[in-house]
Amino acid sequence: MLSKKSKIFVLVGMLALLVVTGYLNIYLNNRADTKQPVSAESSDFFTTYRNDRTATRNQTILYLDSIIESDLSSEDAVAEAEKNKLALTAAMETELSLEGIIKSMGFDDVVISASSDYYNIMVKAKELTTEEVAKILDAVTTQTGTTANYVRIIPVE
Image 1 (cartoon, rainbow, N blue to C red):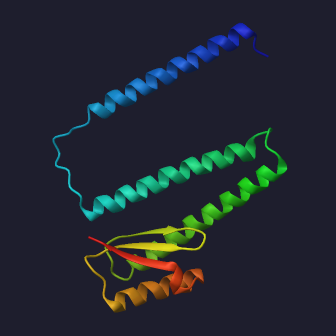
Image 2: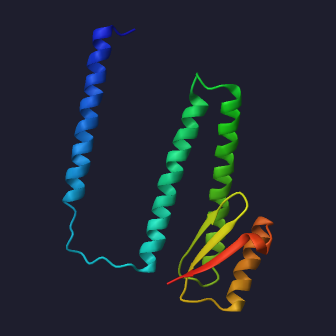
Image 3: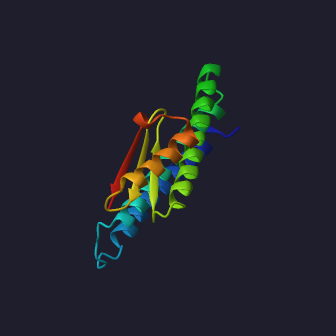
């Protein structure tokens, strides 16, 4: 067991590392090359959406893992966290699978957001024909077992 003095040194050291990390983060972000033109292309949308989705989910998984691994968590809290983690990973697998299927239909890019009931399908296209919408809808309903009422298909330029 560490003495009180050792604990204080460890805590101060960790705090110093946190401050240095924050400073470096601000410094490096401000050094970023701002001479590159900024464009609002759809590929940026898809990349940004995927990055944001991944970051959010990673944070959620870390949070759930901390509940699961904590000695202070009740059995109910651990069970609920495990249930939520399984639901999240199932949604991630469904999204990935559907994105691959829809891309195989000839679309350049697609991002899917699946909640417990709804599926938002964002497809890289100026507009979609009725036939394309029907194909996408068929793929989603076949893979998920949901009905068309719970699927929203959105073309993104």
